Image 1 (cartoon, one colour):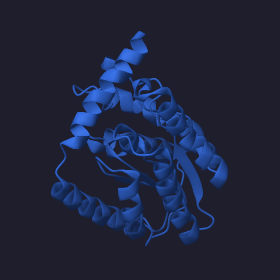
Image 2 (cartoon, helix red, strand yellow):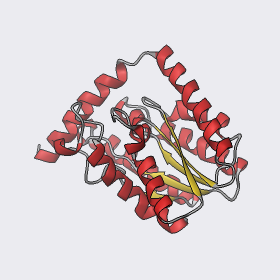
Image 3 (cartoon, helix red, strand yellow):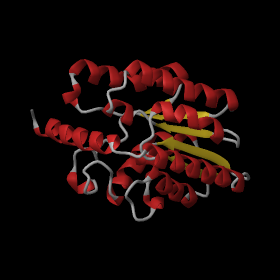
Image 4 (cartoon, helix red, strand yellow):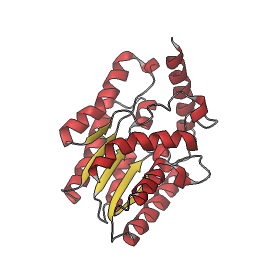
Length: 230
């Protein structure tokens, strides 16, 4: 096992342990809070075009002293510096799965969404959820967005699982994202954590969530795909 595989194996063990230890009641409360906050933000920014970032702890900016240092906030800074009429809405929820996202998305579509950035699936992979199930859940989310806002532009953040889960599962999971991008004509970020995963200097003490510096790289990975759409 080479060094990068060892780092991925370490990430898998730590993330899986953290994911299994979550409190369901607390997660439900957090989901309600996130939903309420997002709806208020969408209403307050009705005069601009909305970019909805829908994801898990990576989008939420877990562990950062200031959540605005997460990649959605950093992208908002880029947008503001260019005087573009877009508002970034952070709808990230730590621990979110594709199934949970499918249940949560309806409430967030009550207000206009012009660009939808989907960042889900990692927690499915770490829990061994069937890649086909994840594909179907993510498809359901995308179809709800397209039905509510047919002209909404769609962006998908790709994700990988550690190779130690087995070659077949690794390849099937990896294929989820290009399959979705092709099916729904989405712009694809090949691997959201490119340049960050496995680098201890760019991750927090848990070894899995990006530091402020790591989030800067995530923002660049997203910006390369998002910027041409603005």
